[in-house]
Image (cartoon, rainbow, N blue to C red; front, side, top):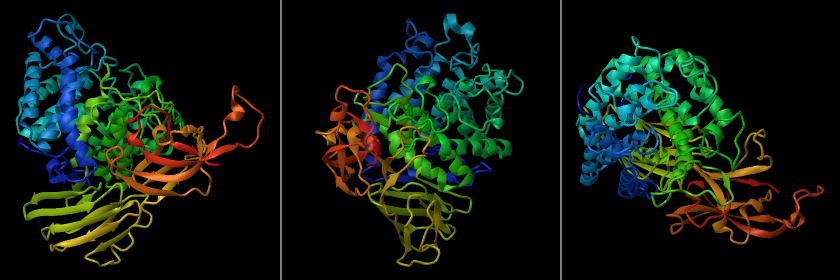
Length: 626
């Protein structure tokens, strides 16, 4: 096993069925005005505040209790260990991207507490200590032991890749070896009621070279549908995985399971798994995906609903589920190389994920509704605090999502931001400079400063919404680059010489409709520009309830950048009309006649991710057409 300091988010260099592999985290240096400030806020505000919350709520003290350093009661929910592990993973990504001695010292201190709590046989879960030790692995369905272990494994891999140190990786391996003994091919069938460990075990196998961890991940996937979790659809135990064709039950769990199964396919090429994944994907994008990239429509069980069950004000769309979708898209993208996965990944990142954290970096959404009367506000923490460290680790790892290479030494750009991309190859460095104001503007200029002759091509993602994209290389609109196809990667041939590439992605303001079976969306549209979904918020319409605003068919919108609003956003300005509500004064129902309007309204639509950062008030994404 060789150290991989500042390695990729998922290491696919030796994965035989990967069509591409992500660049190391540090290869993409973000220098833009959109993501780079968020990464800095994550480092300077979010991570320190989460360390403090984990101390204040006893999450780290639970490890001290388990090691005997403190004589206290267990504090919080039985799966609280997982929050600490996700936080460690986030810190590891952050210092792998940009060293920070203070964060690193705090991380190592927490790791020391974790290592001291591990039991002689490798077991590590602070809830099942002392008098509860007799109940270890007795209730896999509900008690999240293997789920917590999965987050430990992911933190250990990230820590190892960031620092080259094995102190947390050794802890993870000892626990994984215990799980292999108990639930591997010679143990009893077993899987966690909350999938997560499957993808973590595959990454542990990639990092250590130990094939048994991949084997264990497969055992856990294939234990489902055999009744080990009571046959519950909520826990994805209703059918063997290879027979699953629709997303059901708890949204985060099923998406984590799909991510783990995709990791297995990346290593094995299993066609039955792949068929299940393809069917699940079609179910998601055709029936169960919010326009924001949110997933999971029901508060009850944090679950997927029926096809087209996508309520707005009762949308659950948990931040963790939206992050899980990004993780799954990322794996499918590297398996198949199809840009549709990058399109959906981008939609979720800019909308359903980013809405989960406030602009100040220390308040969070758990659900992410698409309409609200003003009562839904971000909180500093939760009793069940899975979402805050989850979004912290995604933001910290985000540079690793931008670009990949394939085995022909060709470079793919999936996401766009002002940045420098540089990484070594045996024949010399590849060095690109990306100049853009994306997502507010669609012009992307790429300077190829150096590219060895063996780096034969650059592939640029053309989003599905970019219907009139143009592409020039050194001022030449060749047949290869002139009219790139939406929903594809446009190929630019490189010859080892410096080059200048100009990609223009027009960003018209799209009025987007949903399927007519989505209730309450008939004769409504959502405003979308580029990757950004927009909404109306009370703060911008002081004299009109946003729920009362209607769009005449001839309404036009103009984008206008406002650097002083909500940390700098492009808003959409248009003219609408307000519903006359006098007919309903003191009434719930009235005889039908066409709706009447009362006054014109200047509409200011803001990016959905930025709502609820000002005073409370109504918000809506979907707007009725007059």
